[in-house]
Image 1 (spheres, rainbow, N blue to C red):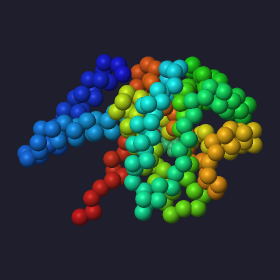
Image 2: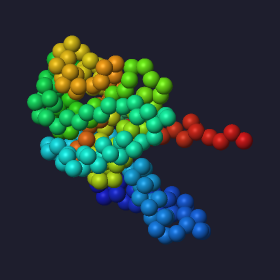
Image 3: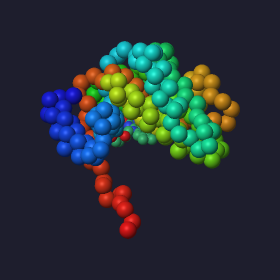
Image 4: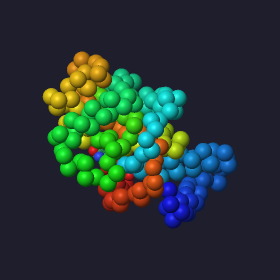
Length: 211
Ligand SMILES: Cc1cc2nc3c(=O)[nH]c(=O)nc-3n(C[C@H](O)[C@H](O)[C@H](O)COP(=O)(O)O)c2cc1C
């Protein structure tokens, strides 16, 4: 993170977050709240990573945080598969390049997963009450947990059509998803290389009170 971005984050933390502490809040509760808010507000989609995969102990914590997400009736309608095998990442990258040769033109292109060496594949039942929603909650829990440990992430919807293509069938099979599950999204995880991007603009008018 460059100095300007860091300064912005710190100023934002003090101006937005301190105001949330009611008079009765205990100091410890307040700083816990600030840590959560800061993680949420500073998480960004990271699209360039150092070459090493995320340490498996850290990934275990990230997965645990994922499966502690809420799900309708606690059905936990998800399947999570984490891959850090180089032959898998390189194999899918080769297939993606066949289908989209222009990918190679991306600056610093190393692989199809935004250069991450660890990728989580999230799947949900083809038919379910709230599987897609629940998988979204699980995914966000994983990404926020990662960011709180300094690990970047990026949701990758673009991996789904490639993984579902005929050429990638052996890789999809390797994920060993339960029958009747469909791949929802991939999530790149890794140690950020370079500056973390600034937040794309949000449209605050999409959420409001009805009096
Ligand atoms: C379901 C989903 C699919 C996404 N797919 C991609 C993708 O294929 N490639 C990519 O670079 N970013 C992808 N993103 C990341 C979004 O572009 C990013 O979240 C958005 O621009 C907001 O930026 P931020 O995450 O830094 O706040 C995806 C995000 C979501 C939630």
